[in-house]
Length: 164
Image (cartoon, rainbow, N blue to C red; front, side, top):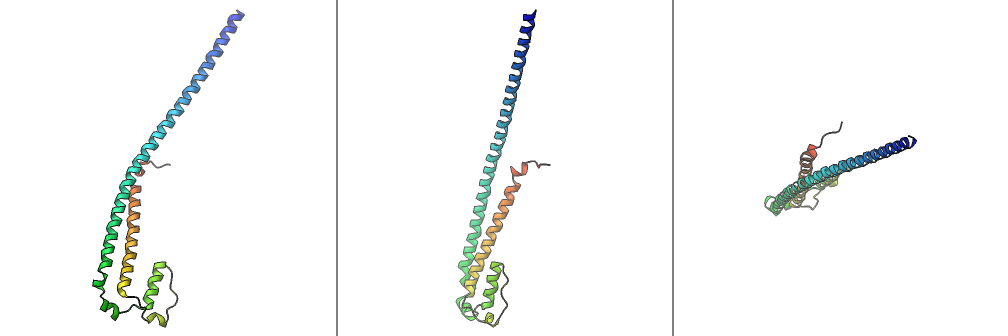
């Protein structure tokens, strides 16, 4: 009887060990499955984001190209709108240049003085070309920001649930 009880206890211990091993094995498999599913979701998200990014960048590049072409055309036409005779008759004052440069740098200019009223030697047509280029740069930034906003509002970013 003693041997039977010992054998029974040994079998129970062996069964318990087998159950513990099986439980650990299933827990590991469940963890591996969860990791694989997470990686699959991440890979799907990244692939979808990459497709959307390509579309956004293509639209952005095309729009910037259009804006740059318009600015180039405007700059090319400057001599028709501000003729050489107009350039000679109406020289830009130094004060205009100071204000323009201050605005470009987002800095207040120094106090005005008598020199600000003098002719600068910069032609109005040249200033028009520079100002057109500045506006072109501004439009480039607007297009880029709109592309970023569009991208962030498009899937997959817009489909990600918010965390509480």
